[in-house]
Length: 361
Image (cartoon, rainbow, N blue to C red):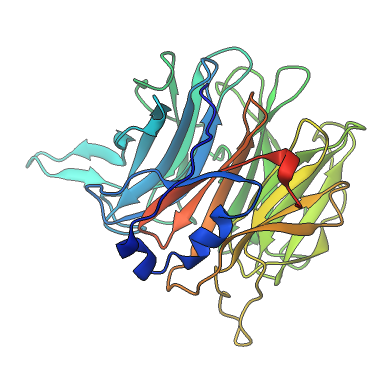
């Protein structure tokens, strides 16, 4: 895959629109590139991006886009990075269910795509479809040509959602462990895991690992420690990120506990680097006194040696735009660079490339 090394020059008109924070991030020694995936699209809003490096070395991102979140016209869009630039977004999945006798289409919104490349096998694209997070269901489509074309999407088994926002991990035995969660009106927000040994044909459900009386938490992301332990960090309604640990490859998990990291009830993502350090992208703000969600700005990158003690190293965005900067996705590619994407004011998806050797400088 071609290395990202160019600096971005922002037009003056965009600076007037509030890009001071972007320039601030771009001047960090760790930042190689900061750019939008697209400048114009056929849909007005987008959210919930995901990133993957395919087996052929291509960087791809997916996100949902449409009139607005929950609108039936919201579909899953993909862009591929080739020749030093991102392709125009292409819709690869939607929530069309069937046509009525009168020819009208029954369509549901789609949500939260997650791309994942197993060590062997096709590129996987998970997403959700349905009216709300309380009633959605899991979907899966695959690609055998580096994300250019995709199979007919299929619904996952009843009760299986797939990775809910953040990427799975593939364990030593080849099984894929998905971080997922429920937003049930009866049992609250709870974290569980879903394991597949055959690329999504059959599934094992693990958990939930806590109750709503302990925490209301969703959308975990994985860290992988040198001693073999797994750790999750997850969003919560409880003003903090929460964590849990597994010493048996995800079969059982420790009691969920609060971290020292603030969380305004907004999605995060994390990744373990090849050098053993851990990277977290998050909004370090608190919920409001009346219990409403807190601001999704600033958006920051933090780093840790042990998964418990974190140091903020890069500020990605700082201004208090209405919809803020949120729902990051972060990976490390085979060239060693860190790639991340996030929602920019619900209008576009921002892509940033970081040099891990310069983090903290």
